[in-house]
Structures are given as structure tokens and as C-alpha cells.
Image (cartoon, rainbow, N blue to C red; front, side, top):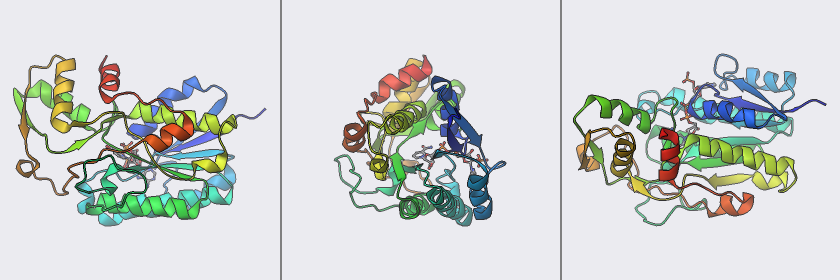
Length: 290
Ligand SMILES: NC(=O)c1ccc[n+]([C@@H]2O[C@H](COP(=O)([O-])OP(=O)(O)OC[C@H]3O[C@@H](n4cnc5c(N)ncnc54)[C@H](OP(=O)(O)O)[C@@H]3O)[C@@H](O)[C@H]2O)c1
């Protein structure tokens, strides 16, 4: 019997590598990994031809232009990858009746509220990255009736470029560091997100949930709320790094793109629909650093 095949695009990125790590736990499935050298998602013809040549049952799209500040100076490339690329994949999948799981960001919300954002809350993205991600979400949902868009926040892991890895480097180099305490959200351990996605695929394959029920926008982050300052302190505490963390305001750490002051995501919908148990951010951080 041929195994069910899950295509992971952008497979060399942070989240892509987390899927590679978890794949061994799903021996009944075949995972096909591609990154830009094997499949450039902005090449529409190549994307359609890929799905004609390869029998794939699921597509998990980890490919993205994810450099928030750099996107300001490369808006065309960010748009090409995050909007056109996402649309190409979703449309090529739709033609073969393949569900696509696509990832998006908490930065599409920029409200001044202090209650967790729900999937149907108004969006107000600031900057090229957030705007292109939002346009990509809409393109995926429009192109594919089996399009699942999962918005996540503050992704970190031992792979790629992320806040945890920056803090581990700076914490070993410097006696003190300033970190903002007026941006509040939830760190998400990328392997937790990848594991949740594979659980969702399994539920669909086991027919515990309807295939069509995955469609739409969903939120996933770890549980709890913190600031970048508290996140940095937790990292240094768990790693016994003597680096002192000074709490600073965002106005004293200007970046090309202003970050949302509050971007906590409400995850009630994904927990209820798929019976997910989501770990608390601090427990996942401890697991990551152990
Ligand atoms: N990182 C976060 O804090 C965060 C927060 C919320 C949501 N997200 C979302 O989560 C998803 C995964 O993020 P991540 O941190 O894993 O990003 P990442 O590490 O930058 O991985 C993205 C991967 O896509 C590849 N790629 C770029 N252009 C491509 C193209 N045209 N065709 C095929 N592959 C291409 C990249 O290759 P190169 O490295 O060679 O460019 C990289 O391997 C993204 O959708 C991101 O927007 C991330």
C-alpha cells in the first residue's frame, strides 16, 4: 500500500525543520521536504507541474518571507513569496483536491485592546511583512476550499533565527541587555505548533473530524501571556546566564516596523475543534532548553 504523502514546503526554515524532527513519530506517512532550490513557490508553472508529477495528499506550507524589518526594503520580494507564492500553492492544491495548511502571524492585529484576539477580530497590519501575510491568508482561503490558515506568534526553537537564539548569543557575550517590556504576547515553541498540526492531520485522516472543517482562520500559540523582557529573563534564568536584563520601552528600541503592543491570541476555537491540549509557554521553554 502506498503511504500517504505530506509535502512540507520551506522545509529548511525554522518551522520546516521542526516537522522533519517529528516525522519519525508518524511512520505510516511519507514526508516530502522541499525548499526554494527544489520548489520555488513563486514560480507558478513549477508549482502546478510539481503537483501534477508528485502524488501528495497534504501540503504544509512553511515557506515564507519572514524577516519583519527587512521586508520594508524588499517589499516586492515579500509580496511575491507571502502572497503570490502562497496563492500558487493553494491553487495548485485545490486543483488536485489537496488540503493546504498555511501559517500566518499575530502581527496582522495591531489593536490597543487587552483581551486575546479572536479569529474574527478586525485586522490592522502595520508594515510590509504583516500586510503581505494578511494578503497571503486571504489568497489561500480564496484559492482553496480546504485552506487552513493558522496564525501564530513569537515563534522560537533551536533552529533558524529567533528571539531565543539571539538571547542565548547576547546573554553569553554581554554583562547586561535592554529588552522591551511594553510588548505583550505569547512565545510559541515551534515544535509544539508542528506537533499540533500533525495531530490535526491525524484527526482528519482518522475521520475524527470532517476534512472540510479545517477551512478558515485559526489561532495557535503556547498558553499564557508575557513580555519580551520576561521571556528574556526566563531564558537567562533557565540557562544560568549572569546577563542582567533591563526593562526598556519600545520607544527606546526603535525598529523599522512598529510591533503591536498587545498580540495575545485566543485559541479557544482550535482547542475545541481538534481537542488540542496546549502547553504553557514557560513549560515549553524549559523543555526546549533542557
Ligand atoms: N518567526 C516568527 O516569529 C513567526 C511568528 C508568527 C508567524 N510566523 C510564520 O510562521 C511561518 C514559518 O516561519 P519560520 O520562522 O519557520 O520562517 P523561516 O525560518 O524564514 O522559514 C521560511 C523558509 O521558506 C524559504 N523560502 C523563502 N522563499 C521561498 C520561496 N520562494 N520558495 C520556497 N521556499 C522559500 C526560506 O528559505 P531562505 O531562508 O533561503 O529564504 C526558509 O527556508 C511563516 O509563515 C511565518 O510568517 C513566524
